[in-house]
Image (cartoon, rainbow, N blue to C red):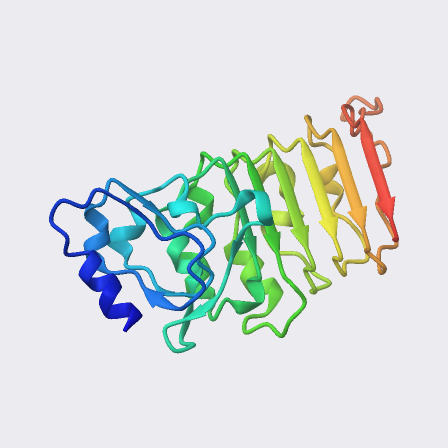
Length: 242
């Protein structure tokens, strides 16, 4: 009954704005919503499907679903558990993006389809697993979630593989503008030495990294035999429960 009512709303010929925020039941967003000038879906946690044509309408906010102030966009299993809502981010390009509950992603193809690396408006990015059973190996998924080079603040939470993908091991080339790095509950034993030459890195937070044994920040020797200044702009370093 709820779905048929929503479908009827979409047929109203003069409708321009629709606020459906904080509806706590499952529903499918109809294709007809793509013609709306304004749509608010904030707090709607049980959306079953979002057509691609509708997702293109609000690139910066995705109708309030991105929730930057509440830990990010929560990935949910949709379409009878055959896929996840991660694909809804395909056309988004916000300034701030947090992706939570990454354990619910169903395939690496979903991660590849959102083309995260191309979203060059993003300045602040957070990738978060929540500790549940993952459908895709963490390493495989993170390999596809290459951040755009525009990112200045990057946070990764509960990544449970001891190895990092190529882009993270060469983070100085992929994220040359990085100012802040936060790692929470990550299993790695050591951090890549490519963090050291990042020219603008001012803040590092390492929290609940119980396996961490080494963070090599030793000065390297330049071609002329002189010591090179490393972590030159670092202002804040925190080790919490490591």
